[in-house]
Amino acid sequence: RARLPVPPFALNLKKYYLNSIRTKIILKPKKMFIELYNKCLKLAAHKNSNYFLALISFLESSFFPIPPDVMIAPMAIAKKKFLKIFLIATIFSVLGGMLGYLLGAFFFDFAMGIVEFYNYEEKVISLKTTLTKGDGFFTWLGILFLAGFTPLPYKVFTIASGLIGFNFSIFIMISIISRGLRFFIVSYLSYKFGDTFTKFMNLHGHRWFTLIGILIVIIGIIFYLLIKFYD
Image (tube, rainbow, N blue to C red; front, side, top):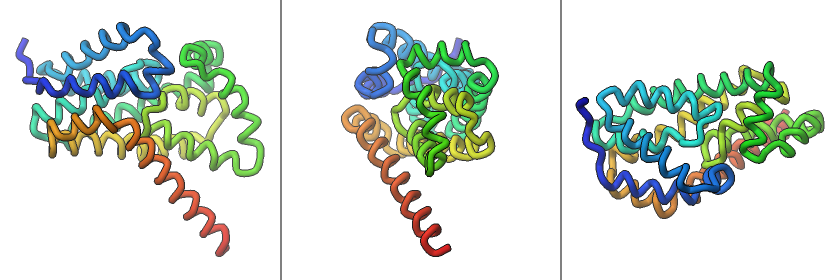
């Protein structure tokens, strides 16, 4: 089968994902992660890579441990385009997030099994209480955005949103914003800067995505407080 060339420096991203929060929490056996990572990287070079990207983006939002970024970066570099790649990843990631939400809302035992696999069961159990107190709704809003934008395991928070009965429309809106912003940054900068960006991701990616995500949440909080103050 015909394959697109995958730049060798795309392999540099492996170190970034090995050291990310999601990997340290989820995949303690690194061999398992490396095998899945390599398979996704091969799919990025396949002639039908767009379809595989859609599949991985969808599954990752519900239970699959490898993020779409692993395919997005080499695809954007090899194909010399980013817009279609960014849209595919965003749309199918949000659809997968909706599946995760529905699993949490209607299939409690199955959903909790996934949450327990990612070692988040105690946090999820306490969330229902948190949401009923004061500004708990806005707290979860910020957490959900960070989960979609940073290396946190987004799938855990899509399922948790269904478990706690978070507003579905707002859940979709936040997912579109957070996932879209993340995938746009990865696809565009990979397309624009190639090797330079992958090296940056390798060294500083998880730190900068986390800092930018937190900064956006802080700006949102300030904006909310200003509106509340002047009302």
